[in-house]
Length: 590
Image (cartoon, rainbow, N blue to C red; front, side, top):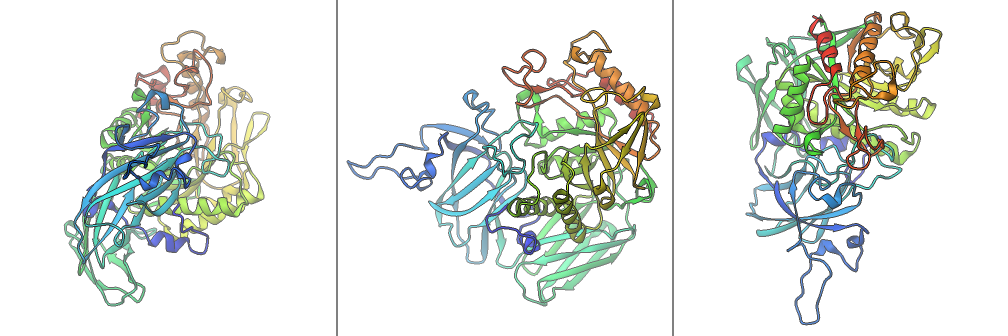
């Protein structure tokens, strides 16, 4: 969330002010080695130390109690927790510094773009603050045009990953709090008049009509815009309106994107002074009654969830190689769908998943403990939602925008999420809206889905842990699910913990055996097969992940790594017995 704010009234403006599709533009990577200062007391932000000034002694009596030179060096992108053993559980401030050379051009504009910094960031160029951002999983940028110098420049970032009560997520989330500049950093150069953003997808309910818009910066009317999709024989020429927009409505004969054939088209968008290259797929996703349709055909979402983490290295995932590791595991399981938990994951994962034929659920980290009804919190949620949708609105693999996960029912929550869902639909009517709930009602062997918020969403999504956190109401084959809503159900979480290689009883939860987890999955699938309105399953989780909430000294390595052991794969990538149960289930679903 940029520090210029994004309230309900100005969130659309905030969305439009961002640069879309950095990979398709002219940019210089600022990835690599960054000097760093670890500042556990956050002393450097004060006027006495003033680390952002990066001062050096000039006279005999000058001295400063800090220096970027001769100290810590971190890899960017990358979390700082995994790069120094002393920082494994560190939550606090780290200062980063990078120098770069720049050749000024009066016809060009310069921006610094961050794919993600966790959690709060203050950015300084040549000792002058240029902006702040809050939120660890969405992109942001600031213009440098009038501040960048000819020749050598210094960029300093203050990063703080301390958990805070009014953060998103709040204090008690169930994953590892990796801090730092965890995603790519780019110096982007544009013409004075440039293509700011665009949205090009199939019209809702259509397989032969492309709709959307192209936005140039500024509000000059009559500017020429061209959209070319050579393979589809599309070459549209148009002029901007008084707000700098071109609205797009193009008849098209297209090969539609699907998991079986993930077709992407090369798209070229150009203006009189600028051009952007992009790969875009076209598909239609819809709900009718209790069914989900992709390109007009009923589809079952064979899913799994995972975190943006490489468990073998105990670090945040950030590269194309990391994306390939996680997504290859999902494909091997038999998935056509992944739930990106519980935050927008990096651009490499999203783009590679799309190319591999994986549909995606993407959500903002509105998680347990969020203070709904607070105007400041709502502003943060709105901004994160806007940043997520803005980044991935042209990614056809994204079929579901999720507003939250496991939030407690209440009027304030309902009002907040309903408004966010309406806003999302207003700017992107082409995707489904969801929110994962964990509230279900038991009456004997009958489970009823009754959360009233479901009537405002496209799909019902339930996290349930029968056999683990909750007892079975009866035998799995006798459990009956009912819904007060005529909508499809995605079982968005279920599972149990097991330590890889730990064998024994299949009927004792506290044994943490592979056999218990295996039997629980068999019981869950027995139950799921009897839910007539079930249209997707998403077990929790693909691979064991780190979480300081997990404290068992032997089963969760509570003294060292702290692991949530619900993975179908171990933290080393080894298959547990439950993996084979889920794999066979998906193999037999056509």
